[in-house]
Length: 291
Image 1 (spheres, one colour):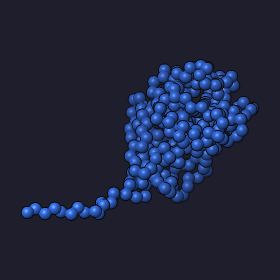
Image 2: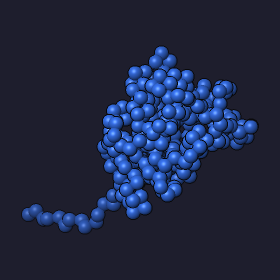
Image 3: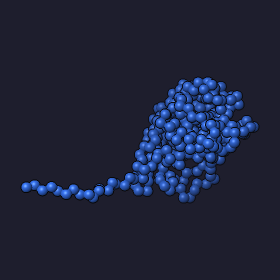
């Protein structure tokens, strides 16, 4: 005669989620890549030096989670911002992270628009004192005519004395298959340059994150860009009507940090207008079109 077996009441413990599984890639990106307070101060200085007045309205193209836009609005009274991004889920993150929790303080001064920056219809959004396209985002446009079209659309979205601010990188290491990492205490940020085609200047890069428990988020963000040169950007900006183009070059430390194994010169976070510069392993500039 068969006897029934008593079922075990002991529950099997679920494996503990790794730090990578618990992490939010947008949180990590904001912490590792963005410095919105410093950016806002820098851009206000660029504008004040060029125009002799304080800017009020910023448009952030390719705004992502719009942390920069929110920071701009809350930095000083009277400021407003327009964040534009093509990706709906990313804009949903922007609303949840940087619009809704600050709605009372913002008081309607931050507008988020889902649109292609190549085709923002005139009058759909208010003219901006300046438009910022940061973190090399405009490099997604690989064809000259595409980039020219973007610059022309940005020109039309500015007030009469407005400016377009483009962040660009370069240097001898920019075309290498290279990795860079920074330890940010709670995680390690990895920047990988996977491929570079010297015939087209197409470059593929990834951001990875690694955690103290050994877990990783591989390819948290991937970028398929064309690495434009500063002269190309200057020529295109003038073609679409910008009357002047200024290049703000980042100053570097006088001597390499002895603790840095690669011996590279490090940026100071301060910028000055430059017409001549010495080539470096890595450099960062702001290319500014003055309407």
